[in-house]
Length: 298
Image: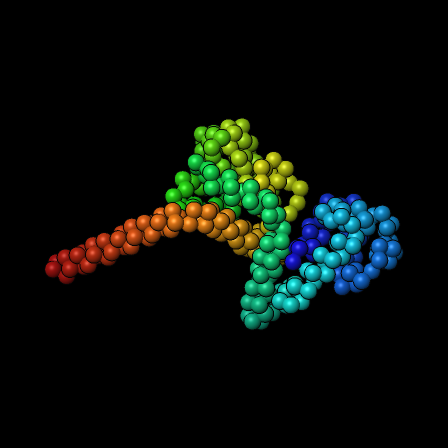
């Protein structure tokens, strides 16, 4: 799956009107579009053949033929997994609500997997493997992703931070150097607090990995490696929902790649952290029993 339909949907925010007409028609009629010639599609959306070709190239394809091939593959996966987008309305059953939310999240994961470019992912995890320190930056719901990340990476002995306070993020950024790495998480790619911290970190020589939506944004333009995520949002699914799940999945992929790079060493650290946590839990349980006995005596 190539995430073509997602790319088309997002492109409506930035393409020229003539190319936007092409995008809108394909979104409404994807099954028809894959069987059309360039001229037929151009006539159907009242555009020129050159506008159709320019639009396909703007999405990263060599031409209309490659675009149709990738779109056809997307449609096959969507039909196979029954991932056709549904919407919710007031009064819908609980069964439908559960189905729509789950299928939407699955769709976001499928699309995100195809949006992440292999060379960008390899660059990102190599940065992380070699990093002396990793700063994870996120604001609002993105901070929850950053906090999840440090809980994973710390367990394989990676020094990392994730501050919820913007001023502390800045303080941490100013103390980075060329041996350090920043992972900036912002679905919009335009969160000013994150952009400010990234620029400070880069001025100190740190490398920057961006986890953001598929679009030309301030964050994607300045980052050293960009990992795109997809999300299907409606009026109740603000970026705190399927985009969060897609971003968490990218974090999981990065963490696993880093852990498997030095499997034995990572496993040893995981075992150590597991043992110390288990020991703490036993000690806490023992203390609880003692307190309980003392309470009974009094």
